[in-house]
Image 1 (cartoon, rainbow, N blue to C red):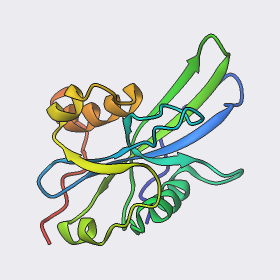
Image 2: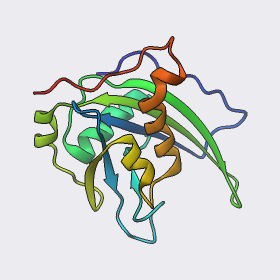
Image 3: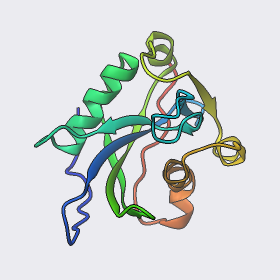
Length: 166
């Protein structure tokens, strides 16, 4: 299920929203992204983004990540590995978000069994292809790039590898 505790990101005030998001990486190193619905009432409509969502009150970030993947894809992640934390204060509305990013490997068999229940679609992208998307959530792109280039940026840190082929 979950690996170690999430990365600590202390804040001076309680976040307005806490989110867990999965950097889903397949056996070929491509990333699975969700195309968000194009509804003006949702956050970032029509954008590519990571799968995930809000933490329930009192819920641990890793538990939320496992729950969200089950809800959105029917995928029971055997391991979610903390990747990064991000605090974002948006303007002009003073809204504080705390985001917990997790690296999650999946196999070809896992992908074939996934059934998406939210969003307008899903797609597999290399890091370069994700970077070239005209509409992608910037913080999610940051997490993908951190995963893709983490070994070069932080050579002394271990990162999750792509899942073995199945």
